[in-house]
Image (cartoon, rainbow over all chains, first blue to last red; front, side, top):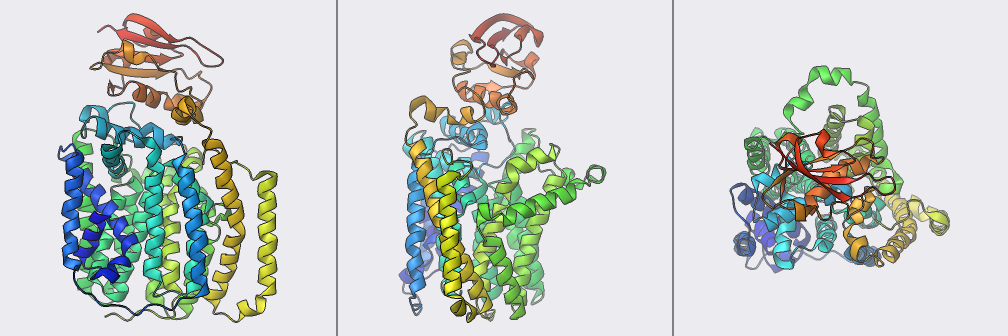
Length: 431
Length: 181
């Protein structure tokens, strides 16, 4: 949290205590993302991330809070409505979930076969041991290590305790819901905001994924939060929005392989929308995206390449025209399967249907820029996932059955986060 | 969640049905008020009611999961992951006493092991049991072999073979072998 307050303070997102209190959720997400990216970089450079180093990284990041200290503008408080009482069931469900996650053992396949073993190795071997991390038996060797780095940092204080890993993901998810509230509370129709928050709190897919201690919730949260921050830059012309979007996007790319394509799509769309107003702003968006990739994934890719680790997400895989042509039948299957997962009420209740309805209504009301942004980012992300399944060297149906319900989470959370914003009557005027 | 039922069951379906009935009743009762709202707000009200209707079922599911996970202790908790992959968590226990810490090893699994997740996850189980030893891909390059359902001598030149775990049920024998280069 301290690191995150420093990151958001340094970016100029908040100024003064009141604004800080209204940014705690986003600050926590930025702190996790920033720490994770820095930790991955330090591991690549040979650091051990001992306890004092973990504290030092957080302390350095926290220094950014100095920029935000001092009296800030006091926004007029939003009138309370009876709908605010919905905070009670949202919080109660989250608390009950936290209790459940405390007792959850490490059972999900990806968690016990590689995510947590990597964290254990970073902790027990005092860093990124090339011999162990290139072991033949290690699954997904090329996956970036933000999540294991976070878990290893926790082990420095608790010892090797896997019981807390689910709660770590819970904290990230709860912070995301808080961030959705923080950004939507002054803009959105209250009923839309609370409908989204309640759905996110009780969505069975979110609860199941949190119990699995895998990386899908963190990458989805980082991507969705990056998208919302990028929107604030487009809409409110807040420079801090683009900075935090880049920080969170770096976190997404450092968390899972698909984070890379989500982030590329996000900043391409941001730049395209910004270009309508100014080429300089478009260039700034592309620069921010490039910086996110350079910091979030490039060091890790260099390490992977240097140690001859096969890269599952190579550029060659998605541009192999003959392979794609031979497997063209995968395209409609992937589109249909992923689409069905997106709208499955047993997983996400009615998050996507509400998002689509609100987007159509917003477009009718003249919020063309914002709807174009949301639809563009979501479509890019969806297309990226379809391409990934189309080009997979593994059996398609097995891949879809074991991963589709998880990888679509990023699109769902982004759409959910933007839905309250789109429900406002008009687009904010650029400042 | 590990202990959450895969299908709702009688109680779950009852909660879902109750939620649906209450949701429909609320929307019918207040339909005039809903119609007066802006389209996005009206849609959100419908969705909010649906989410509220689903909440009792979701809470029941969490409580049901807790009833199971709070009873897990010791081996059940520690081996929950391998067990989900049809692997006994103790399958490779003892191999660390036979393989020196600085030695490399390779794992080989028979395709006749009947469970696909178990065949895929055996290497990960061995990696956990033998941490921090390094595994290599080719048996011929390894100092030791850990095989499941495969005679070590059939995949590399071996000096000595230990039977780590005798066959039981459909699980074949687990061997550890020191290779000869």
